Image (tube, rainbow, N blue to C red; front, side):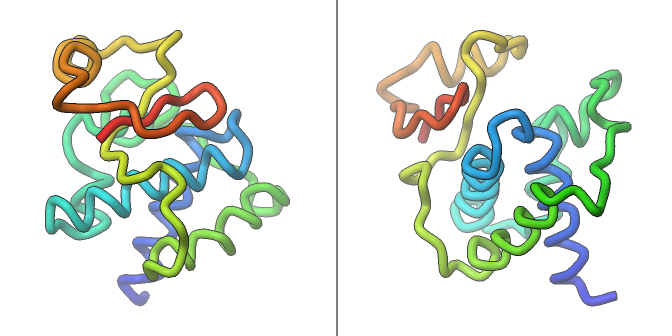
Length: 137
């Protein structure tokens, strides 16, 4: 297996788990956040996606999403996979305007997020809203 294919597969799973209720725009916005972290933190795609407590649907024990998988024939998931190539290869516009963090502000459960991201707007300004998600630098 080629590393890029594995990374794109993990990215697709992450985006689907985190934002499938937001449609293709929301899922691609999550991919932009991952791409921004890859560049800013100088880490691999897998290191960013698998970092402890960064994406609850992938790494947080007890999160119900960690055992949910898409139907690989789902048209929305197939569209996501095709669209991710441009983000992965750096050929797509960043719809989040450089966001490194995001959350549904009606459903934030992370105390860390509340204190460090929402609690310090000068350090982490709001840079986009897509669907129910708010995106911060």
